Image 1 (cartoon, one colour):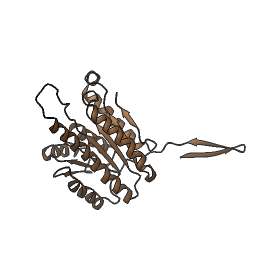
Image 2 (spheres, rainbow, N blue to C red; image 1 turned 120 degrees about the vertical axis):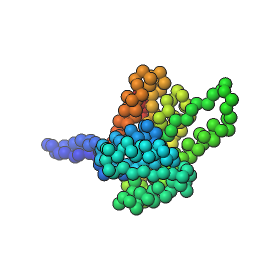
Image 3 (cartoon, rainbow, N blue to C red; image 1 turned 180 degrees about the vertical axis):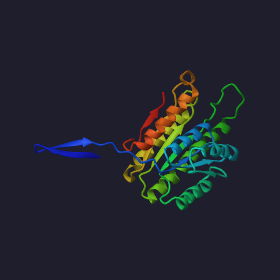
Image 4 (spheres, one colour; image 1 turned 90 degrees about the vertical axis):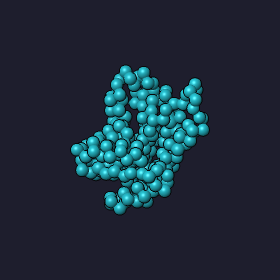
Length: 239
């Protein structure tokens, strides 16, 4: 968007920054029972958003809800039976019923997956299944979120976020980068944005800065992507 001014017969175009209004928006956070998921929820509640906590771990989800309720009454929880398409689909139907225009923001939190050992006795097939399941889950949430944003004619945003240090596991970084860039191109004609965030590039750097500071940067970057309507198809590194 640009502001057009005329002076002495000359037109000037002055760029204007566009911001998404987070207040009263509907924000869905996956893996919300994790510590980072809970912190993200608290932050967006402090910005007066409606936040839906989603997880398949009932104990963690209840704990997250308990810690979020002091921030705002506009926090809700949704327990998944599993992370299949059939289990996730009713979530978005429920959001459409509870809120006027459905979801505005999906924060797709990719949970940590331990790096496989070459020395310990671990099954390669087991790890491959875990990785495939996580990728399918991220795809499932994003696909349904985009579908409902499109149906409701929303200028929505999807944020793919990893809490795993990049040196510990390179696959999530590659997956998030690929998904983010490809989905952004596909959804751009419909005014739906996609951004990605990766944590510190090294475990040593993360420990030096402190765990809390690392999470703070991830949360600030998430807010920046959601709010800044010019941000699309790019990946932020939290150094």
